[in-house]
Image (cartoon, rainbow, N blue to C red; front, side, top):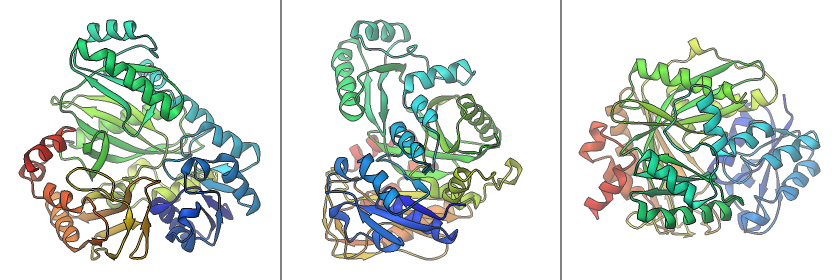
Length: 448
C-alpha cells in the first residue's frame, strides 16, 4: 500500500480524498494555488505545497509544478479527483515516467476515451447500443450536413474531445447546422485543442442514466447500480439520485451487463462511469465512459456501502477488489444536491466572502464541502461549494430528509442554488419521478 499520496485537486473532492487516505493510514500532501493558501484542504492534509498563482492553468493544471510537488515531498502516488488533470493522458505518462502511481485509469485508457468518436466506434463494434450517428470524426461542414440529413433532425453535434457539457450543440433544422457546427468546433478547440466533432440523432426528452463500475488488475469488474442524473442545466448536473425511479430490477441488470461489457471492450482499469440515454420506450444508448471519480459518487456509496475512493486507491496499489458482484446490494434511496455559488434564478456566478455557514446534519445526512464561514469563494474555479447528500429507506423518505436538510442549510455573503433545490423538491413532477434532461428548462420557465 502507498505511504504518501499527493492530492492534485482542491475543494470538496480534495477533502474527500484526504479523509479516505487518513482512514487507510496513508499520509497526504495537498497542493494549492496562492488564492487557496488558507483553504480547508491545505489544513486537513499532513503537508501542503504551493504550486502557483490563482489561475488554474498556472497551478492546478500545471503538470511540471504538480509533478515537482510530488517529487519534492516524496509521494509514491497521486490522486487527481475530477477535473483539472484527471483525464490528461500526458500527465499520467509523466507520472509513470518517474515511478509515481496515478490513481485512476491508464494513460492508454485516457488516450482512447479522450476521443469520443473513437470510443463510440469501439462500443458499436463490441455490440454496445449507440445512438445512430456519424462514423468517426468529422471536420468538414458539408459532411456534417450530409450525415444530419441521413439520420434526420434534430441532431446533436459533440466535440470529440469535449466533456462536462462543453462542445455540445443541438440542431433542430438544416439552416441551424452551419452555425452550430462552427460553435462546437471552436469550443472543442478552445477547451482541449481539437476541432473534430461527431454527430448523433438527438433523442427528445431522454433520461440521463449512468452506471458506476470498478475494475481491477486481475480483470474483475463490478457495477454498483445506476444513478439518475436527468436534472441538469446546459448538460451540467444539479441533482442526482439512486436508484432511478425509471429503472426496475430487470433493466438494472441489463444496464450493468452492458456497462461491464463496455469497460471490458477498452480494457478499462479503476473507477469509471458509463453514461446512457434512456428513451421513453426504456431503450438505452451508450453516451460516454467517464474515466474518473464522478462528482455524484457519494449517493452510490450511500446505497451500497462501498467506499469508491478507497477502492480506487486499492486498485491503483494493484490489490484485488474487495467485492464480488453478488456482494453488491442497493439499499434504500439517496439524493445529492450540488450547491453552487450562483444566483438561483440566472445561474450567474456569485463569488465572494462567505459570512455565515451552517450545514445540516442528522441521521442519513452527509455534506461534502471545502468551505466554511471563513472561506472566500474565488471566480477562478468551478462554482461548486458543497454537495448535500441524504439517504432514506424509500424515495419518499429521502425526499423528506432532503427538504429538511435544505431548510437547515444556511449560507450568507454569497448567493447559492439552495432556493432552486428547495423548489425542485416541491415540484409535483419531480415528486412523481417524471424526469428528463429537459426537466429544469421547463421548470425554470414556469417558476421565474
